[in-house]
Length: 538
Image 1 (cartoon, one colour):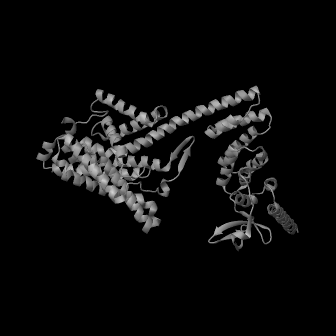
Image 2 (tube, helix red, strand yellow; image 1 turned 180 degrees about the vertical axis):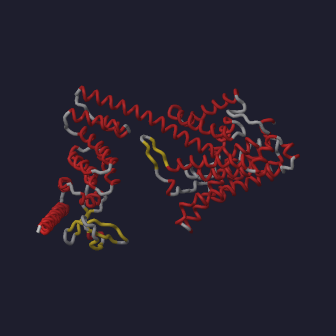
Image 3 (cartoon, one colour; image 1 turned 135 degrees about the vertical axis):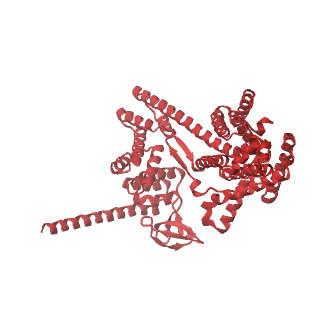
């Protein structure tokens, strides 16, 4: 008997809840139907206000459609529908259920017209209604929107949403949005003092904007609390800006390292002033472009693997060009640095013009794979995915090159030729072939640097010219022929440059860095880490 009574009671509750839900939907439909009879913008705003009072998230699709100009009236029977263009006509659907009702032509509809002020009010209302979404990401976005555009009328909805929220991160954002709403409304000073503390604890530029917009109304305690909060936020922003500059410097340093690490071999180890090094970087970037074009047209599903395919191909293309350059030209000019400089400069012009003739003079599009898109936020630090992967990639290239030089037979032969060419030759090492392979290795590394640079820079015939001077600066500053010096030099110059740019500007910062290196070389001609070898001794 008890079980039977419980079942009856549960059935009554279920019927009651279903009946209430049906009533709520019917009430919402009645409000939405009023859009069919609006004559003026004030009438439209009145209907929107009624939807706001309903606090029902089911109205979100209709409001979004209204803001996007897709809420229409079916002329035949006055039904309010959401339209979507499809082919030559329009598909229209129910504004609550989303059920497709049919198709019709443009002349069969009358649009519900709005203006910018109404569109802005819809934006605030959408933020309030989406606080009840089942998707935590949507709720987080709604809380962020309410924080930036605090609406005192949304306080009750925020309180209800906070009480029901289960995600800690979303709840924290909602509390911050509530604090901003309290500051925007007519609340008692004690509540505003607590709100100031919550907003300042966020410590970002949005918090600073909220605090600056808050008027303390001559209340001495609120004025002091507001100013103290602004000072705390400014201090926090200054600290995060310093961290951000360090990251930008490391990011720039990784780019410089990629561009210079091949030059550290050809110039540092072999003593060859290769003015065509930048064009090896350019060839790697264009190899990436060609690979992506083939994938786009024939195998679009493999686009995320395009860089993995382009890396070995860029190494081979640039390495082959470097090998041919050493065998055909540079080997005749060893010990004649001025002639080497002029000859390789001429080669760089030839390579640039060849690329212009094949691919055209304009920039070519190279896309980011999905795993290199987006950004990560750590407190006030923003790290873009492509820059992060380039930093990781340059360190992998550096470690791999160290392994080749220190743990392989070819690396042993290269070091032997560098340190004592005559003795290496007398021990049976084919020094001309070692020279050619060393130059090819440096050029190949420049090619894979071009793959990375294609993700953050314009791919054009002039791509390499933007890095050749910086590459020489890094190699000379770090120590000719020393890879560890190249690493330290690249990151040191990158970080220093980014700290100078806010005060001196990009151009003057680079000039100051050049002056610094000139003065530094006067005191330490061999750079940070001196290396004995053929290039140094001659």
